[in-house]
Length: 435
Image (tube, rainbow, N blue to C red):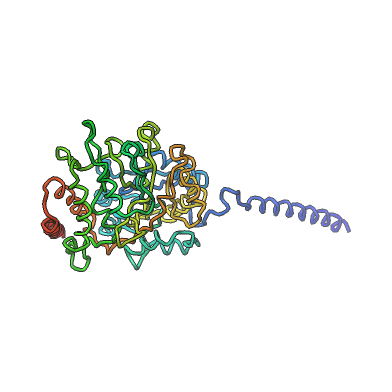
């Protein structure tokens, strides 16, 4: 009886203690809101993720606002560092050779062949499957561009898109009594207007339009750059001849070429119209001292006749993971965070075009930038980006060679057939000397 009297209270006490212990265990296992969706594969130990920047644009402030701050809130153990290619010893080849190549890569799609040639791109498909990452959130344009670089792997994910519009100086139009340009004009329409404003008035020179780069207009026709099967340039063809004819109409305007000058800056020169990438527009016009220099507005970038509604090639600022990274799970966690709706909305309001489908990103584009208040921002989205032509590791240099056609027209005054032949020969020689 005495043993039973002692045993019952002891068992009761044991049950109470066990219950308390169970509650404490359950409480400690409950995840905090900050960590509730952190993958188990992501380390909780301190880790530094380095991001390499070559191609595209990203400021120190943007890196802080859209990478460092949102990532640190969710992953306080992850430290981010930006490694720019401009610093000495930071070329991709040098970093790879030294064993110091970063984990993440921030770049734009024209630079992808550089990383392909180094065989440094990690296939994102396994990480996407592992994390249940939803690719259906993305616009098809950006993803299809990624797949075009390698059908076997997913080379990266688009972070922001770049679109183009044409900026124009309302004061110059008013001075000459010419109606403002409209959305959905052709290059022929724009050039016809420009001829009326390429004049010298009371000793002051005015330029109607600068179409910018030859290869950019050619991209609206998806003209080939290099044949990847033969490694030969594809310049001496009818399509590039058509583009040069458009440029010739501009450079032949009396007064367009001034003492050898044939490239003009909308914000420094008396230039009536100029096509510009959104990133360039935002970069310039975010500075209030520059924005107030001109009485400006936007219309859609002109299209090439026969290619109605076609904009420039898709241009994407993107994120990739380096194959040599020792922290791929953590690098992908960073990618997921900056591609979240919250961060993408902050970027859109500041002036970065989101690659995501949701229309709210477009509707809120540049809403936090007073310089663009009341402007025709829809002009940036009127034309559809064209897909890139077949890829080659030589394409970037050949684009630069094609760009030289503008000088040959404006200054050297060569005929189109001669220019096409010379550029073809120059490009092929360059390719042959860089196996």
